[in-house]
Length: 552
Image (cartoon, rainbow, N blue to C red; front, side):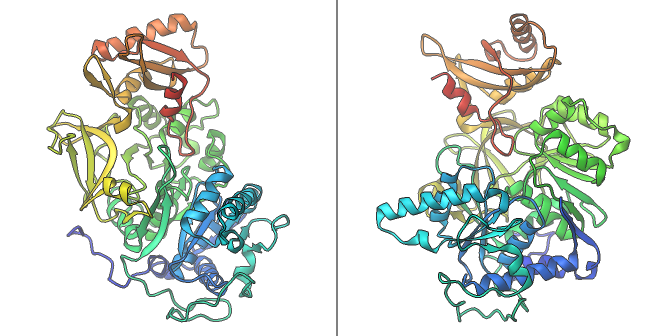
């Protein structure tokens, strides 16, 4: 489905070539600034084409996968775009995972090469050892074919690793595990640069992203060249209003679907400048970039906005230059959006996207922000709320969210069963529950597997959490279900109090009474546990399944 008001990409389309070509007239403009250097659009193209040539001369063939375990430095967009330019399929992955996950991803993807930031070498080396042990037990030989390309620091402790810089400076010689580049490739190359991009179709596989794997092994989500194009055309330009003179900064990293659009596809689609940060997005680290580089567009997540507003180091409005912000990953509490907007004078556009849809398809918009809701469908996407029997939910009724749009992934790699559940014809089942009002605004009701049935009625943990968050003494909270002695489900809340929250027993009683004034009686939390922090994923999503496990 191609939206009629947007020109689709041509049939023969390489998204890396597209993003470089549209910025050639900006060759002297700064494209990226990281913790070490800044590079112009002209230098970005030179590095991408050289890196593409280096990958091919290593014997990596078009359509083969390479794993990217990389922090957010300028090397990351160079590696990702360089691979796509060469027709090779990059698989960027979370940099905070244990070695066992990397071992699984290497084997599942069939990658023979991994590009790794120097700070992650020890973990990656362990992953290779685990992979070798697993395959040796099963009589395979794949482990001997996996080689590392190291970004940022010399590969002093990994045998046979190649420095990232060498692929940029000169064409590396093929190592003992490499094979000649496929003669079937029509891509022309010189000794250290690629003269043109791989001749790919818009629907060819461009890259993968792994899902979070919160309900099992991570799923390899397969995306096309056109998918990246559509997220920029449908969301970045018309909704965000992203411009060439913008400076953008994303707390979400490039290896996430959300961060990949924020820090790569979106700014490159308009010629903006992007700030990259390798370290974790703590409030202090974010404040430093907001005040030093004065980004005009900031992309965050709800838990980070909460932490920023609670920090004593929160910078004044005049020290920043924000014009618009976004939030995704979880529903943004109304009070957080209102407080942030009042302090900085910039709205947070709360939205929802997914790895399967690549970026945001439902969002608030400038001039139409209704905090406490996720807004309305992004033009170019169609949404439906359905009951379990497949019938459509009426306004005011909770339903499962289905999406139809041009950025949908093709499948989960080698996982037909889960692909069939999620990718249903033109529609993608998100796994989220929503309710829409008569005006067309959507309100999040939780993940499908998070819903609670209390006193015979469904209760959304998100609804209870939103009520708790409205109390001035609550910093963060999460609500789960707990079975009582009769086996009936009751709501339980885990609450992080602000400093000076007072006596816990008194506060628990106060919070219960507070929620009762806002929600139906059966929804208030029967038990409240006070904790110092909540378990979260690397994206900042609260891991409710870990809290549920505490009650088993």
